[in-house]
Image (cartoon, rainbow, N blue to C red):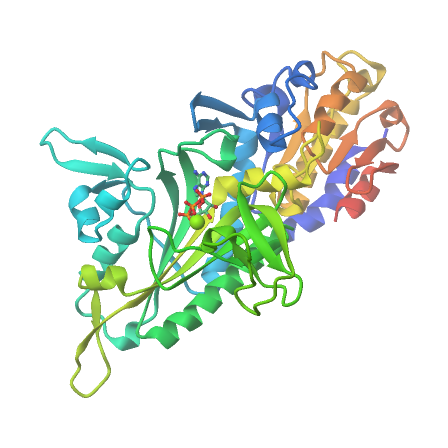
Length: 454
Ligand code: ATP
Ligand code: MG
């Protein structure tokens, strides 16, 4: 068998350049709840809402109450990757990340008149002093009050872009499709403050562009749809929609000008015309709303007296023109699995996959194990974490045969499964590599594996 020192030497030359060393090996037996996966496959899979069935069936989420879920480590890894992509796109438009409290006083919601408006959906609570609060479903009030306190801000400080990625709370009446509609869910919300309408529109276009980049980076084809402003209010809004038969929203797409709008905007459903070009050549589609952008105008800045010192000669105070922009982080995760997966197997967008590589160790006591295959494979896996700066998943259920483990593994959506099979005992050890993107299988030594994965 090939000497490992040789392997380490070729790997080390890469390591010098890329190693940050916070990536690691993740062992099946230590990943909470990823157990008995083979037992659960095939049972209770409904053909509707695949993401919910797949996540639940593979114990990747666990419901505590209707619409409330524990996300297991495997799903959290995908979620963190999505958060990283969002943070990266926000950095590029100079948006800054903040964190606002989830418990918000009724007094603030009274200022925007939304306490009364938001009837059943608001989770309400009272503290020991009998002060009323809600669990925030969105944060326009908190962020506008924050910005209203900054009395020193002048036109030269603008625009201000503040965002957060935090849990939101809504007492949804139909919380029944897993992460697609939770009563507590992760949302990315950005709030923007500009000097005037024209600048606010520039900001709006810039943010929509960043959102389009985010969806491109996760391989989702979304369409922008004119939407209703609902109780958030404002002048104009668009929804980012993922077309899917399972979507709860209905949209019209125009066959002439390609623009699209939510059916919520239509009063008379008898003779629907395109809102942009007036054509009646429209296609009705179901879609999942994954993001929503609003040009808010001054609804909140006016009520909260949020203003800045203008650059005009009188240095007069002017209210901010605002925008707000939401992305449903957990919904995007579920929606992407929903549209990409097959019935029994999860498929993740490439950039969100929890682990790109799963390495399958030989059965304990087998010839492959006894002849150093396990040790060689583990060393190889460690090198992969260094070379590619990523975590590698190890199937260490070595009390089972490889064949038995493979079915369950395939259904978790690893793009590449590297197996230390029979040929690992050859003088130059050979791995079997399953390529789930191309639906193909190859045999390669470790150096070729590195090239292949590179
Ligand atoms: P919906 O019409 O689906 O109820 P919404 O229009 O009320 O959503 P927004 O206030 O626009 O939602 O919230 C911003 C984003 O947060 C939405 O585009 C969606 O992606 C996500 N989102 C909203 N409600 C939920 C929920 N209950 N569970 C998961 N994600 C959600
Ligand atoms: Mg919306």
